[in-house]
Picture 1 (cartoon, rainbow, N blue to C red):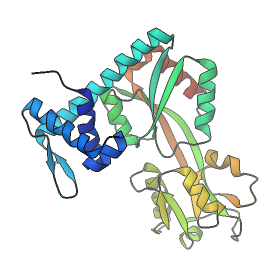
Picture 2: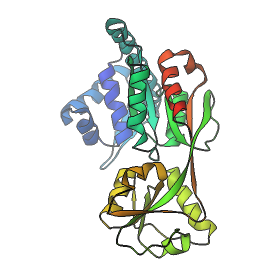
Picture 3: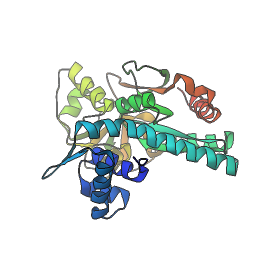
Amino acid sequence: MRNLNLDQLQTLIAIAELGTFAAAAQALHLAPPTVSLHIKELESRLRADLVVRGRRQAELTPAGEALVQEGRKLLAASDDLIERVRRRATGLEGRVRVGVSAGVSTRLLPLMLEALSRHSPGVEVRLEAVGSADAMQRLRAGTLDVAIVASPQPAVAEVRLTPWRNDAMVALLPAAWEAPPVVTPEWLAERRWASFAPATQMHGLIAAWFGQAGFHPRPFLTLSYPGALKSLAEVSQSAALLPREEVQDLQDSPNVQIRPLQPTLMRPMAVAHRHSSTANKAVASVLQVLAEFAA
């Protein structure tokens, strides 16, 4: 049997992650017939059905699931090999894959990357937006090197968690609203407010803040990115609960007002990495910079 074609393997993984041939074709910048051909040739090479083509969704067979699970590791190993060769040719120290959850401040990220470029200019960081639970599993599988995750997280074998930041949450309100000095669950429950997507730990934190006061309001809108939530408050559409660090750039904005919460609500985060990864100098450099931004 001939060796696996990594491009075809990548196509199968894209179908598994996105659910349809069409979405995989768009993500990989391939023509739809090419995606179908990749799967047909892969199935022929392995003499196994890998995908069940439904009317709306494509589902993996057990053989397809096994190939995708191990194929992710194979693609990651291939990327690492290419990167090692490239580093030898260019003198770079290495590339570090960093998973970032939705709650991480978009203000902090550029500052951290700038500090890393000063500290270790040969280290290249690839940021990936990924939920905290998924990030922990990807660290275990070796497809991420470092992750900034919501805390606490269930223990995962071979992954170490270090407390990183514990930032206070605040209410970001449209400037036109008549707001009290502090925002309570009772006051906000009667107004329009937006929250993080239900799958995020931030959503759970905010729901618990309301719930502990006996309120269970539904958000006006749920979004995945802090910047989008800030925009809603700036255009007077709704309030948003965000880490104080995330709204520092709006402190003097005439379009919004920032209020502390009562009772207080904290957003704890941790840095996660594989136990063995600190032997990698590039990973160690990233961890060192992250430690400088701990609070």
